[in-house]
Length: 516
Image (cartoon, rainbow, N blue to C red; front, side, top):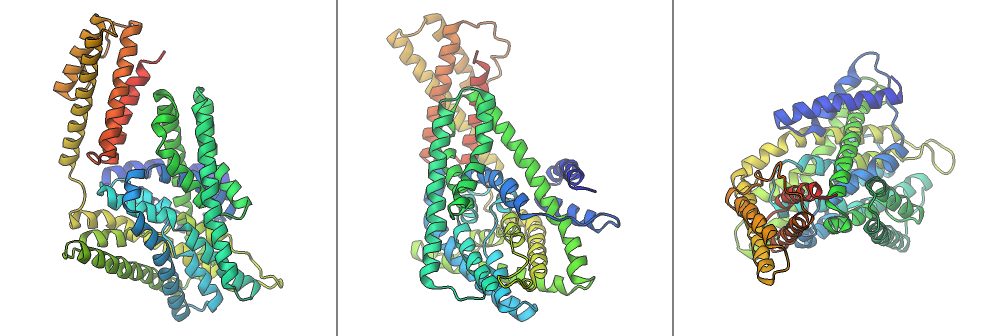
């Protein structure tokens, strides 16, 4: 099975897996990894060699961009302090814990144990976002989990570069060089991310062609990533910053019809890339085991020890920080939220890309010691966290009782739609009082919006024979009023981001149906 055939096979398998995953209510990435491992164990299936360029340059930018766009700025501001602590403190603690465990249970030299610790130190935004997408977590918990995984890259990447320098060059890292490199990594990534977001915003604001809009949307994460990496900054940070900034301006970038088209294309691209990358992770593990382990099971015990170390280190720090905060705020301690945050620490695409980028030799030309073992342990830990934590995260959320109740979400959705309809009716009253619109159009729209208010849905306008220009313009104006009210409700904290996105899509569909 060659490369192209493998990719096509994974896409077909992913479509089937996604269907069963929805019916079984289990995360598709975890099921894809399992299927990949099973396929890789079938006799006759060739070994899969994944290059770092495929992961870092082709797969990573759009997936990171999609994850960043899903992170609302309002919720990100609310969790900024704990995200900063976890993005630095937890990465350092996790790396140190993995180094200690690797030295004790593996034959890795200290330098390569440092490399392994740096590779596995941070959670993965692609995996975490994919696993948490359907959990109905409270907004702040969801934002904390996603934001931590998105913004801990600069710390882990700095550790990785320092560890790689020690392993490859055999030298000693100076504090001055380390600090300056961190400044370039983080500062350069943030700066390029801001510039990328501004450039994409200005271009898309002046573009009305759906095809060009879609192309610009797809190219933006790649542009930010490549430029940041070319100046020595963090490409991942640049993509994340650009996506978060552009996500706050989604409703201002373009028209409703183009937003719907771009959203559909982006969702398709994300599905295809996630399908391929998680399937490849599973496919790669059996080949690595045959090449490195020679059929022995020692690698599994070592990977299990490292995975347990990561979980324990995360549990300790999250529970300690949570206890300190809860005692300071209300004096009560609870386990539910810290447990969910601790368990949502899956590894995935970013650690795999880092491990694949390891050089095969040192500066003196000798082979890099235990490179294949680092890659095997990294892949094994990724598979373990995706499978174990992926399959058990939803039951833990249910057991903790912190998931948003579907009935409450339906109530929130209905209340928001009623407030939007009331805002539209209020605007119609203003138009009637000022005589700024034809009376017949105002009366017809008032009847329509009153029906919408009573039924909290718009089912009575299908097949409407009235197609006058004034009527359509007024309907668009009312939808714009509702969109503004929706933004106000979200900024005021009265509705969640999921409800906002759901209603915004309904408004976009209505608006698109009125465009020429």
